Length: 299
Image (cartoon, rainbow, N blue to C red; front, side, top):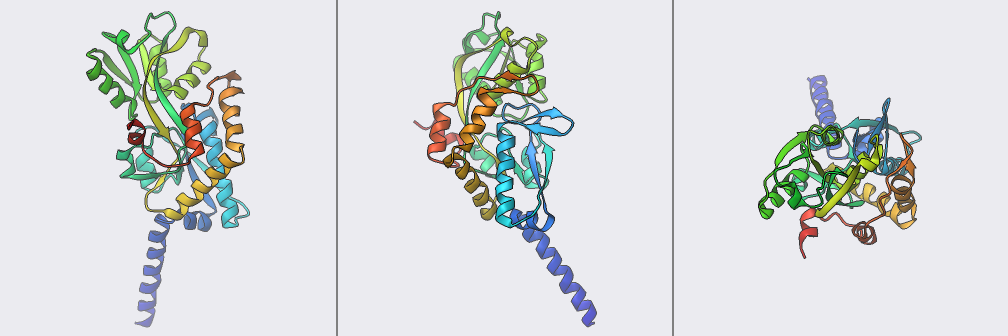
């Protein structure tokens, strides 16, 4: 009987430990010696070079965050596993424990904050429109009667619809499964325009066969804070992530990282994206916070 009770107690303790780790990412990382970083395959802030190699401003920043956490936990070695995510599956993969930290190109908004937490904002995005340079399209009004591509599961869809209603213009929407697919629709003539985050548009233009064939036009459709995403109700892990990002801002290393990925030639084509840091991003770094997109819309 005692053995049985002991077995029950050990099982309960183990179950409790697993449950605790589900909401304690630092404990999970320390116990396993590994961590899973969520990355993107064709974003402006995170993308793949193939063969399991992921790079970009947010990818490298996320790696630095995890190395800081490795030091904090006193781990001699930390195995970083890379999990590619899409706009559709990124939130479920964080909430179900598959991904510990997602550093792709996720907009921090009030709806998402119900399911996940966000680190302090590291990039403030402007949603824009890319078209063929010879298209004659220069503003949202010029999209009337045209076909517009955007990526499934992104906030650009809502932004587009809001402007469609507000501007009294009518256009057909087509959806790419990822950003590369959406850009391909523009490239092959299946779409007249592609609406998405400016950094994603600039990155896709720089990687295209003839970058001069494209231009970013029209109004800024919305301003969106982009941040790394993590599980809700894990204050210790969020503090560790935020502390690392704040250190990178304070010592100037994040600014150097920005220059490396946006102002210098980048792989795989050694092309310069040429996207200077916006005033909105500078302001977010000067006062680190995790305010959602809705706070940016308030004037």
